[in-house]
Image 1: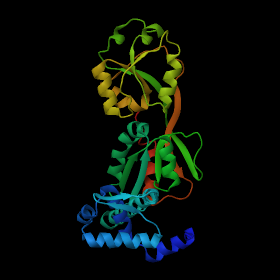
Image 2 (image 1 turned 120 degrees about the vertical axis):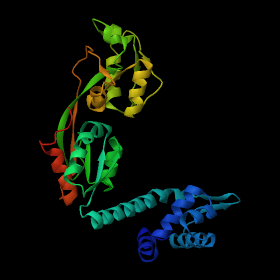
Image 3 (image 1 turned 90 degrees about the vertical axis):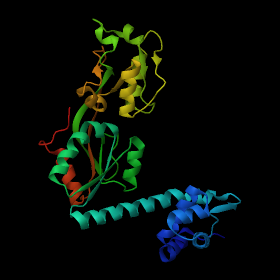
Length: 315
């Protein structure tokens, strides 16, 4: 009979090592004991012994051995996300310690949506770094459910995002700026030369679609129902700004997107607004989501900076 979870936990706490997790992850990634040994800096026999020790500790087979190397078992595959999370936490912990020891300012784990990056952080972070050069900001991008998952796992200190339908337990959202949908295209698109732009005209154009799960795609589908026939669509579907701008400029298509996402491209003259006869296209605001519990000093300074009227986001 397999050991209960509490027994396995106590074994790992008493006898487990971070090196075990490193070997587990590398073996799963590389599929070779020798290559794992070379990458980690161990001998082949040390890797083999470490794996045998870990399998005995967990009372489970983690890899199938074969002539070409090793293949993770279903048990190993289930453990990989946990191992990655632990190693990610260790790496972040090392960053925190180094930042504190070298510069004395601390570190902020910041998560943001694409809209948050382009409409808030791209202008707010340079000013923050000038005011607080000793604070390191570790920024990564995520959307929707991935944001909520990162919050639930305790992987982030602050999130800059669109207002969620429901705030995560123990967190609150503070708005920074309003947003709306706009229709955009390249500055030399023929549609901009038309004296009157109506549904019939827009329905004849080719459109670049946002991903299916986004609010922009849902709103476009609603608007497209007003066209006389289903519109032609571009083969590329992307939420990457640079790729989107390139396609709009190169391929002569239109797109319905959040203004926050494209406003820097509009300001730079890379794209132009289409004066389309659209209904009200308001979006939920973009803002800061932070825990109700006290933040660390570095994260608190960042939130104060983002909320400060002295450093307004671009509009």
